[in-house]
Image (cartoon, rainbow, N blue to C red; front, side, top):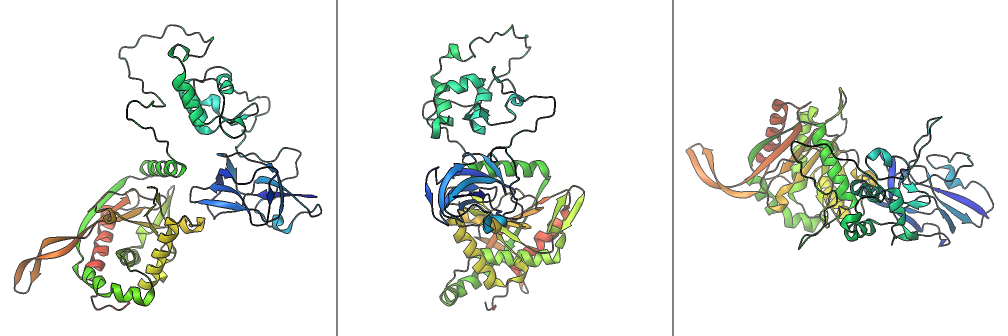
Length: 452
């Protein structure tokens, strides 16, 4: 019998770690080659980890909700082959070090400084420093969310250890802890044996908001899923990183709308693809970036990194209400037909959950079509580390003044707003405004006799 160490595979150039969502196989289960062993999630997409060998799963080296580094050992599989290093394992990103220590755990252990000792808190939790380090207390695993709630509710480690858990192997879930808190008598909210002296007098009584709100009446508490938490963190980080400025412009796209209406049926019949406005907008953005390449950059400290390729990220709404941003790589090398196929392919993969990590990496400029939801304009948040994002609003019929040789006339035109948010650290108003104007020019001066 040989024991094969299954390593967390590489999932993209910038992906260094993943969160274990769910174990599909349990210790003792038989595994065929290419069977899915676990589901994982990165800050890009969710994915599955298959086994390259057949055998029996003998050990799970990481827990659900734990974070694992790329190249770390995630499982031990016993095979029928002789004891040797499988060729597939030799190609792994990080070779496991020869050590007598247990396999790498799913959580990051703190580094002990010589002469010091890391201790788990036994009293009530009063600050986050007491929770630094392992996610375990003794032999029991606690997720970061459970520990955060315990921290806010001043529940000690000893008290946590006494709460029955309904999760796998008696694990304490968030619902177990919330039910315990809700059922706990008010008189017992403080940790038994804890003595407190008189509190200092305050000139103004500050309202204390509960860290874990309790539902009352028709209220409903909905915990953010993993993707929504990532989106929230990314948006807050972007606003904290870049001083946002937003410029607006209104474009007359009547010629473009009439052209698309004229060719869309024949295009779909010939190519088997629907042509939407999105690839048309992307083409105009790519042309404008070629004219103003300093919009296609990123910032690293005091360095400005000018990107060689134009990789267009397109914000896509998922059926569950979340958002993902697949990327069209080297969009400057694609014609309108190629952009249409790329847009439709990525949108379909996003809706069906089949995006790969590489599909959402290395974007240099983002487009979000808020017009899909009937919105006319917006102030989008920059998709870091990019420095600009374009929001395209709904196309509406409106009366507009048109200049003719015979004089000005009022006519019904197809009008739309374009909103450009940009990072004022590196993109000034002149550049941002000129770039936005150039996009509108390309859309307004559309060739109505164009063949695709």
